[in-house]
Length: 321
Ligand code: NDP
Image (tube, rainbow, N blue to C red; front, side):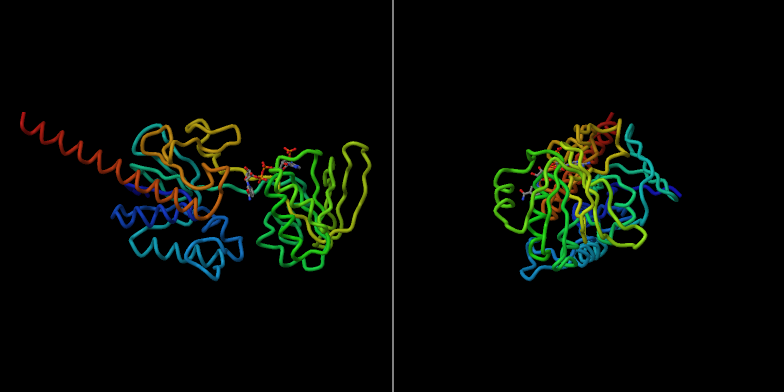
């Protein structure tokens, strides 16, 4: 089936749903292709305490459900599927999902970013069973436990500090002896007596897949090549995020880390906008994603209005000839 739309939004996290609320309220009847992780990264978070308007915090999934209802109330249409391909070479832009072809005058890309992983088989098998990429989501389960955090950026420092609220020992494993994290974050982590730094080292294996839980890790010291198995209850991978931009490779300008390059929320293609984490390696907050989602919907609305006015003007001129 072919669906024709003025505004289509890819992704249903904070950016996508905010764009939908704005586009729907402008009577543009937007379509949201939700993606298979509907609601985006906030759906794997527990308490959100920094989204304005919720003085007592709100659960991530609840916040996304409220945003979804708000977008729906003003006439947003949703498809629960992934976009399999997009063709941005001409307008209307074409998007294919498993069952539909969508032709759209404007496209707002809000496909977000995903946590990077180490790539170990044991890591994926034990994900959610002691391995996590989100301390905020899962830290609570590690009361009085031994946990390892991998990474040397701000996220790793922040996650390690957060985990000291629960865990008895937090070991921060970093593959070098200097940090990508800001000095203030490293200093804070170093001042925290519960955090032990394990430098020039990598986790090579996480045990015990057979038992279905984390019992120990295999650590290699990259300087001495010494390998040791150490007891562990949890492993938090905090090595950065990867923007979900594979669909746009070769069609949009991406930076060296794969994020969509935007000016404001405009891409180099007229009518294609990007909002949220897919174009933001720095702030990556629900509220900043919502803000850029709003901006993208307004830009789409203004572009459509300007084009409509130009078309009307042209037909008046032509009929007067
Ligand atoms: P970064 O890209 O900054 O850091 C990733 C870290 O993971 C690096 O130390 C990197 O090591 C390490 N790493 C990458 N791949 C591997 C691997 N395969 N195995 C082992 N280690 C690996 O990501 P962050 O998520 O930490 O930060 C992203 C952005 O968000 C930054 O701009 C950061 O400042 C910002 N941020 C700010 C916060 C704040 O100010 N409160 C909190 C969180 C994030 P190496 O250094 O050797 O490459």
